[in-house]
Image (cartoon, rainbow, N blue to C red; front, side, top):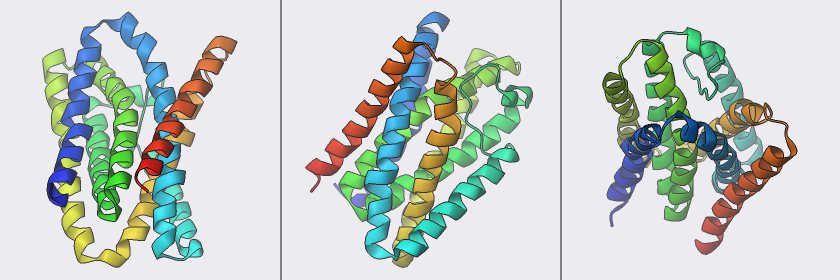
Length: 248
């Protein structure tokens, strides 16, 4: 299979495939969704941290100096913090989160931007190696499922009907394909930029996992839930480590 097709299939799985899975979860009822989302978030934290530390950053360090890669990662983290402050980049999984006061259209804009960036991340990873591409796609899907659940709920709370909310959410998710194609075309022309794109990608994964998802997990402090969260986070990390190991 050609590299272009691999990137296209991965981007499709991370966009419309995730939205379809989210729609299926929503059909199961609010109680089932409320039970699954915290567990999906825990698993997503593991895959995001694993992909950043075991995949993206090591690959970036192979082609650029540690100082340049780490500085790029730091700048990326700060940039995502500023973007989130501006409500352009927002990931929310809690009905009481402040972003629910924003309009549904603003959420769609921020989600489309985020999904576009995910597409660029996937393309950059596949350009380094198929294994890195697969593990990165898995991490994207793992954090997209709970995010899309939250975004769908925001649209419903903003007055969108279920069909309209799903349609708009699907259009927003489709920007992953656009990001993947443009990322593939641009990065192949500028190969020296790949390590820095990977560093920024790692920064996005770290920011989502540490600044957004982990605080959400800390809201449930019961011993049983805490143990389950730790277990699922470790499962996510282990899965990424296994993918990396089998690829070498």
